[in-house]
Image (cartoon, rainbow, N blue to C red; front, side, top):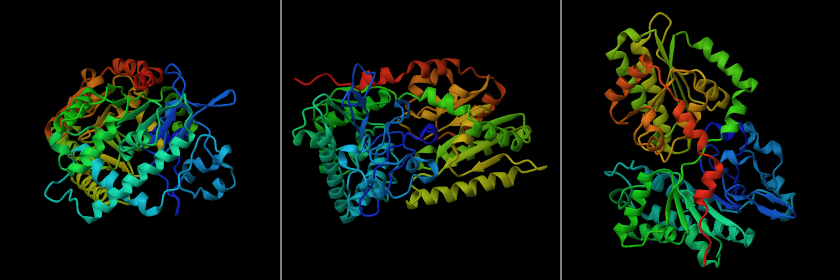
Length: 479
């Protein structure tokens, strides 16, 4: 979400053999070891001070920025987050590295586990986005990559085991580390283990595209957890169905939507950089009404149908020409992968085609920026008439939650019914089938013409606190 970079709460994972940094804009931590004290504080005792401890890529922004093991502050600045970290880490003894544990992962293991298995296979499976004519194919490349995925999970398990105290709870986050729960048990770890899935959960039919041996390993590992958390009851239902389909008993499953970083968001939105960005956007937008969309450039976000819906809206209501502008902000994600590169190219083509079709008198319907600029995104939250959030499928979607906190009076939200957050706030916004371009265009028109009331959404977001989330994902004590 937008706040991850604004508040510098990203947690970096150095990778040996070149030191790579995992995605800092993702909404999940790859793995955290937390001490849960009544759902209020997570950390590990160092003397008399509780210190957050984590292994992985990012912790949720609302928990505040922990000290990072072996890192100088300058290395987590937004414009420097890809700097190599080993010179700094080499200067610090292991016991002095508070907050970050650097795990040595060979480059080929990282590429196989992260690029191939996690992002080319598991991510697409969980989002139901495979083109089954062509993928997935469990060929020699996949089999080798799966071995690397197993190794990656083993390395992260060993690193976690070595820093655990008897009062810690291990929270494993997301599809990159789905084998960790069972690995922890195999390594003698008796601490409570929660696995939290921030993605959607596939149906049994969608899950069966994976080789049976892979499916069994994933489910048996999840079964070893004391608790599995998801963002919405639809994902909990699907997860239970996966266990039923394979004849396995499911672990306890809890629905616990991730909170937004309310304080951080409001604090960041008042910074000078956001005020400046808002002035700049106001100078660009010379129409009475504004449609905003803010997303990563990734296949699940449904960017192309969003552009098509705007084009269809203008077909249905040509009188809206020169009366409304879409601010289309999409920032890079996994841009080294071929599918993501192709998506970006197609998005540029569709935006330009739509602008060329409707451009007149110095006005064009879409102002697009395809780079990452958090102050600009926060400024856009403060000035939209309609916010379009239309993913094909999302585990939750924090953009909808964040935007409600900063939205101007009368703003409307057009929200995909296939997002996890639609279960929680859908009754107060305009929900749409993400595949139905005509329905999305009609909802945009309605949103422009009928003022909305996002106060109930704000109330839900404000009551969905970190205390509540931590309490929900804290498993019962093991016997």
